[in-house]
Amino acid sequence: MSKNEKDVLRETPWRTTVNWNNPFESLEELKDDCENYEPLGELLPGDVHFPKVNILLLGRVGSGKSSVFNTINSCFRGKIFNVARSGSTKHSLTTKFTKYPILSGRSTLRLPLKFRICDTRGLEVNHLMSKENMRYILEGNIPDRYPLDPCGNISSDMPGFKKNPGLDDKIHCVAIVQDATIVDAMQDLDPLTTKNIKDMQTVMNSLDIPQAVILTKIDSISNMTEDDPANAFRSQKVEICVAKVSEVLGINRNMVFPMMNYEAEDQLNPSIDIMSLFTLKGLLNTCDAHLFHHYDDIVERYAVTQS
Image (cartoon, rainbow, N blue to C red; front, top):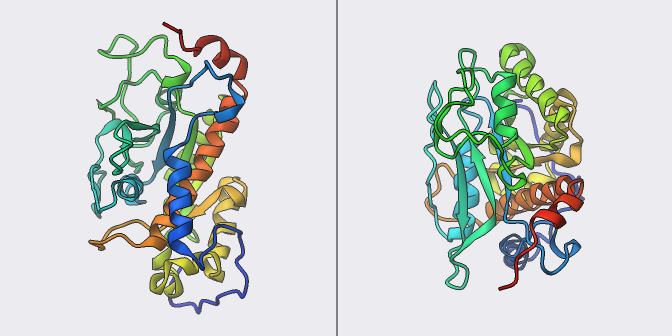
C-alpha cells in the first residue's frame, strides 16, 4: 500500500475507540486501566490472583516488533525509553526470546504490571519458525532470555527448559506484527514467510491461543495519519489496509489494531500513546477471554494462602 494514492478522511470513525476531542483525559483513562489491570479481574474470588499474562509478538524482520514493545514501554515510563534493540536492518536485531516486564513511571506503581510482552527473532526466509519451536514457546517451555533461532533445534534437555510450565508461564495471546506498507504484496513479496505465519497460526489454533494483528507503519501509507495520528481511525486507506490484512490472515477486523511506533520522535505524542494503549487494552481483554477457559484450574491453583 502506497502513499501515492489519495487518502480520504471519513466524517465519522470507521471504528469506535476513545474520545479524541479530549486526548489527555482519554490517555489517562487508558493508562489507569492498563496499570490497574488484574487478569480476569473481578471474575475471580478475592483470594485468587493470577500472577500475569504473556503476550507474544510475532512477525517478519523489519515489521516493528521490538519497536512495538519500546513504544508501549515508553507510554508507561513517561518518556522515550528504548529497552529492546530495534532498527531498520536486513536481519533481525532480536536474538533472544525475552519476556519483558513493564514498570510504570508513577512513584506509587514501582512493581511490574500484570502483563509481559514477549519478543522473539523476526521471521525471514532462512530463519522461519518450526512448528515444534512455536509449540514450545506457546506452552511456556522456553526460558526467558534464551538465544532462540526460530528454526533451530530445541531439546527438552537444554539448560532452563521448563518441562512442567504453569499456566502463568504460557502465552495467552499472540499479536502478529504486520508492516502496513507491504500488506498488498505480502503473499507475493514474501510467500514463504507469509506461509510460515499461517502455519504458526495453525499451531496457535490447536492450543486455543487467540490472535490479533498490530498494523505498524500506518503513517507510511497515509499522509493524513502522518500529519495527525488521531486520524488513523478516520483514514480510508488505513481502514482498507485493516480489511486486507484481516482477510489474508483470517483474523477478525476488530482484532486488527493500527499503531504507530516511536522511531524518529524524541518526545511522547498523546495520540501515539492513545493508539498504543488502546491496542494493549484490546490484547489484555483477549488474554482474559483465553484465561476464562481455564477458570476452574485458576481458582484451584492460584489461591493466595493466608498467613
